[in-house]
Image 1 (cartoon, rainbow, N blue to C red):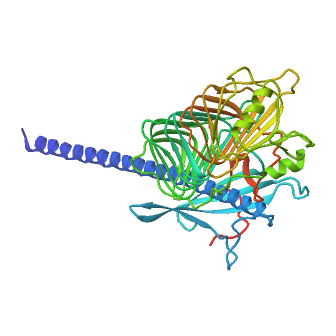
Image 2: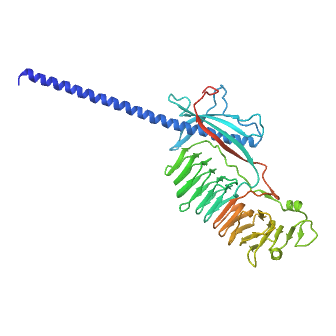
Image 3: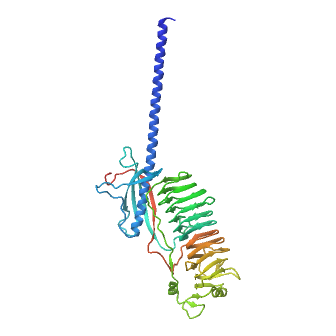
Length: 494
């Protein structure tokens, strides 16, 4: 080969190598640009999602603050306000990572009265701005949420199942149609379901505890409404299902394998070993929805006497109303046997012993009117009964365990229909020792049910004899929620 041809081939090789190198570097630059763009997009999406959760944290604070201020008849909380320099006084949300606080974002909230001209209308309009990571970040992202809420107050018997300082031990299956409250810890010892109430009656299937909520392994819990926990939630069950939101005000949570349809908001952290599927998750939130301790309502037999007339002592005559005082369970039992086909009246048994009342033993029991039994000892109620032909449904049956050492238990074969509605109240303990289905309310200082209890909430038409705390039960009922364009802040950012 001549030198000219050899030089030509070498030149072609160099040009080819340069072209290949150019293509390789060009493709590398393109892929680098795409990678950087994808990373930026992913980071941006992450920050946008975080900003939305942070803004929602501002909404929750507003709902809590509105409940507190309207509860105490103070001017309603108008929002975060401004600092000494006139800038928006933003709040910071953090989460601990390895024991070190890590900022998640900041939020600012504004609240206005939706209907200022109508003092009876308790609707408020919340605007919440959220930023990730903070308002001063060069690449900050901002989201805005609008939420309308209605602050409603309720008194009286508003729960299907209520336990005060003694808490709830949900043994061997409970099914509750309505809302459940515990002033102390709740332990689910077997399968428990809490559902929205029957059509036309209040109760969304919410579960609220001012203590902790524990679902050990081998147990299961299904809650159709929302869960509100004060201190900590531990769910070691293998497949719990929650149809609403889960909020733990002060602490964190552990979920072995749980599904939450709504939002999960934790004052603490989520255990990193958790297996949780949720609509959204926000941790390290400020204490927003503190669970107020609600004491057991009071009861005074003297109120019954004052309303219905002087008591007949041990069945004596001369009283002006169907009110009876019995010294022993035996005296009351004799009266019952003589009147079992037309039961009525208000009865007080001062016997401190224990009694098992078998409604169906020796014949059927029929109720001709509302009935109340107040007792100082312990009572187990068994058997079925019905209302008499002349009675107007529903007939209300009230059982009051009137001392802190008293115990009321549902015994064998106890069930009711909408015609017979129960008010069960115990200053001591209350529970079911056998399969029980009732319509009404169950209230006690503590629940110790050892067997299946099914309760369909029915608000009692009368609460004579009972007194409720002057502090009202306040609920911030969410109405319209929407994400909107960022809008203009009414104050400058710090």
